[in-house]
Length: 209
Image (cartoon, rainbow, N blue to C red; front, side, top):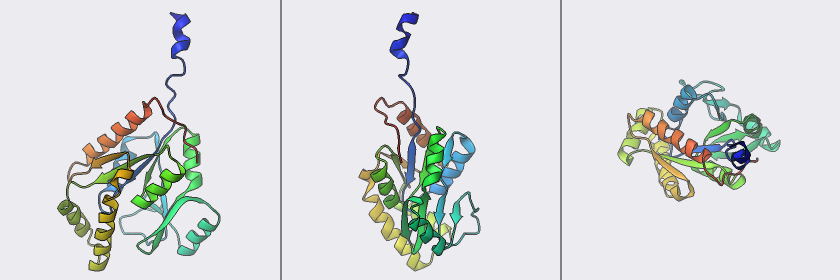
């Protein structure tokens, strides 16, 4: 049988993926990434840089890299970000070198981005896999936002208006995953299933940034 081995050699050499988890504010993106960190060691979960103030329950270098607006603008000038945006009057962006190093090591890269950030990553990296995270319904989502107790009526309305525009762009994504209240484990399972399926696609291209 050894003479037939060459037919199968090289058929399965999975390339590392760039996976974007997106969706409206309050849908549970951070909670999903926390579970992924605990479950998997072969992923590199990108830490976003932001100029907004750190919240009480957030950790520097885990949830975000917190920098001043001046520092962020210097990063933009040095072209150190693959994408960035000004969201709710603050900057958010993805450090370029962080992704390159992870891909070079053979690790899948997972990014947490808003919808416009996901679109920019798709534009520069067409091979990326875009997952849209959605709540079961609008009422459940609104209760999550209200439960934060960190929103003014004005900022809440901005998030609601933005979310409705974001949901209208769902066809730009490859997959949609429902994150129902109390079903976080099942949500993460669905995302992991998507990643496994993507690794087994026949026409899978190498990611380059």
